[in-house]
Length: 67
Image (cartoon, rainbow, N blue to C red; front, side):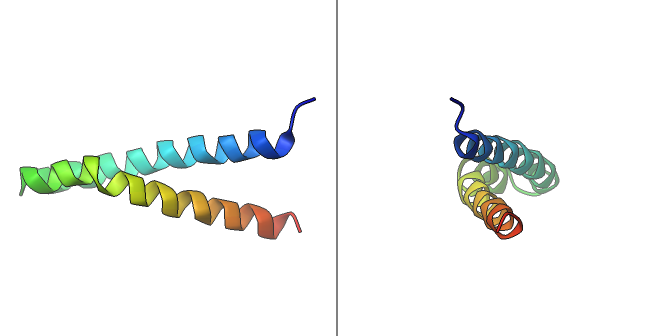
C-alpha cells in the first residue's frame, strides 16, 4: 500500500529543491557580474540553508491546512 504521507513529503522536498535552485541561479547570475567568489558561495553554501528553510515552510503550511 502506498504511504501518502511519505509521497507528499518527498514531493515537497523535490519541489522546494527545484524552486530553491531556480532562485539561486537568478541571484547568482546577478552577483557574478560583481564577484565570482560570492557566486561560488551562492552555489555551494546557501542552497542547503535555503532548501531547508523552504522545506520547513512548506511542511508547516501543509500541516496547518490539513488539520
